[in-house]
Length: 566
Ligand code: HAS
Ligand code: CU
Image (cartoon, rainbow, N blue to C red; front, side):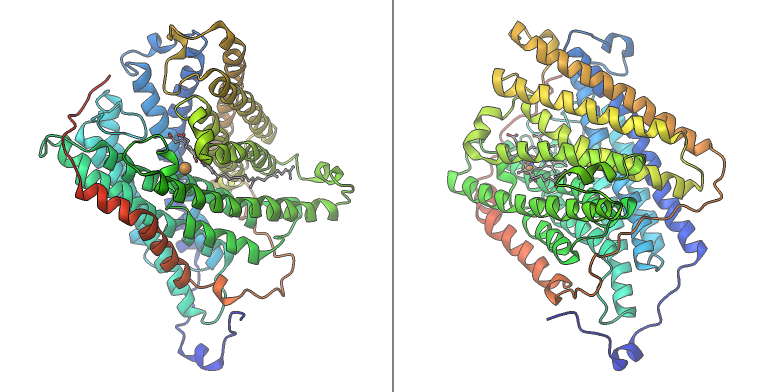
C-alpha cells in the first residue's frame, strides 16, 4: 500500500503550513554554527593529543613539553577519546542536523527555544566535565569503565551533554510532527525523516548510559554508596556504546544518500531501500552490546550468541548502503560519459574537496566494516579483543567513515553558514587525501600489530618492555600515517579559519539535495510510518536485554571499591 494521497477533507482540516523566513533560518543557523564551532574546537585539541600518542609508540615523547596540562599518557588518552569521539561528533551532528532539518521541511523549528536550550545544556555539560578532565581527576578513558572512578562532576557533565542532545532531538521531533500535521497524507521528506530516526535511535540507546550514571556512578562517586558493580556498569554502558557508533555513522549516511549524489550529478538510486536502511538501524542498533563483552564473565554464552546474531543482521543495512550509494554515484558518473565496469569512477567529482573527502571516507569504511564483522565473530573476537587491532578498527570507522565525511560536509556547510567562500579549496582537497593516506597507513599497521603480535590497546607501547623488535616496521608505518594526519589536521584548520575570515561570497551556497532516480516510485506506507519500527525496536531491546538486565540488577553487588589508577 502506498502512502495515501491528500484528500480535500484532510486538506481543509490541516493547519496552514508555516513559512520559513530569513529570521527563522538565522536562528537555526546560529545554533548550527555555534555547535559546529565548539565541536571543531574540541577536535583541534583531540587530534593534537592523538598525534602525541602515535609518536609515543615509536619512542618520541612529546608529553614532557606539555606538562602539567597533559600529566600522563592516560590523561592525554582520555581527553583524546572524549574530545574526538564524544564531543566533536555530538556537537557536529547536532549542528548539521539543525541546519538540515529546517531546509528539508522548508519549515522553521517548531520550538526554537528548545533547540537553543538543548545546546546550552550541552555546553554547560561540556564545561562541567572539562574541569575534572583537564585537571587529571577523571583519567578513566572515554568508556569510563568502573571500578575506575572519576570525579563526580565528570559523570554529571557527560550526562548533561546527553540530556542537551535529547532536547535537540525533541526539537526535531516536534518540528517533523508539526510538518506532518500541515501536510496530511504526504510522505515525510527523506532528510528530515532520517535525521529524526537517528535521534530516535539515540534516545533509546542513551537510556543505558543514563541509567549507568544516575544509578551507579554518580551515587558512588559522591560517596553515597561505598562500592559499585562493574559488570552491571559495563552492560549498561554497552547498551549505549554500540548504538553510539551508529549515532556517529548515520549522519554520514544521511549525507551519502541524500546529498553526495547531487555533488557529482548523481541521483538517489532507490529511496525505498534508503528508507529501509534507516528503519533497520532504528530496529537493530541497540540490542547488540554484548559483542563488546564476549570476554566478560557472568553473561551466559546464549545471550552473547543472540547479540552476535543481531549484530550480523545489523551489517545487512550497511551492505544495502554500499550497493545503493555506489549505484547513486555511478548514475552521475555515467551521465557524464563514464564507461566500463570501473572506468566511470574517474568521472566522479574528484576535484571537489567536499565530494572527494566523502568518497574517500566511504572507501576507508569498506575496511572498517570488514574489521567490524571480524570483531563480531564471537571466536575471532578472542584473537583481537583488547589488542591494538580495535583502535585500528575504530579509526577506520569513527575517525574515517564519519569524521572524514563530516569534513567533506563542512566544505560546503562552513561557506553556507558563514556566507563566505571556502578558503583554498586545493588545500581542502589535499586535506582529504592526506587524511585518507594517514588513516590507511595507521589503520593497516594497528590491525596487523594486534592480529600478529597481540600488541595491546590502551598502552604506552613506546616504553613497553615486552615490545619486540618485530613490531618496529608496523610501528613505523603507523607513525608515518600519524605524520600524514598531523599535516592533514593542520590543513583542515587553515581552511576552516581561512574561511571564517574570507571575503563574503556573492554566490549563496545551498545544501545539496539528491533527487530520486525514479521520482514516480511510490513509498509503501510501512516505510513512512513510525509505529511498527519504534515498537519493534523497544520490543527487541526487551527481549535481548530484559532478562539479563533483570538478573544483573537482582543480583547486584555494590562491593567493588573505586580505583584511581593514574
Ligand atoms: Fe565497531 C568495537 C563490530 C561498525 C566504532 N567499534 C568498536 C569500537 C568503536 C567502534 C569505537 O562486534 C571500540 C569500542 C571500545 O572502545 O572498546 N563495528 C562492528 C560491526 C560493525 C561496526 C559489526 N564500529 C562500526 C562503526 C563505528 C564503530 C560504523 C563508528 C562509526 N566494533 C564491533 C565489535 C567491537 C567493535 C564487535 C568490539 C571489539 C572488541 O573486542 O572490543 C558494522 O556496522 C560494520 C558494517 C559495515 C560494512 C561496510 C559497508 C561499506 C560501505 C561503504 C561502501 C563504499 C564503497 C566504495 C563500496 C559492512 C557502506 C565506493 C567507492 C567508489 C569509488 C564509488
Ligand atoms: Cu559495537
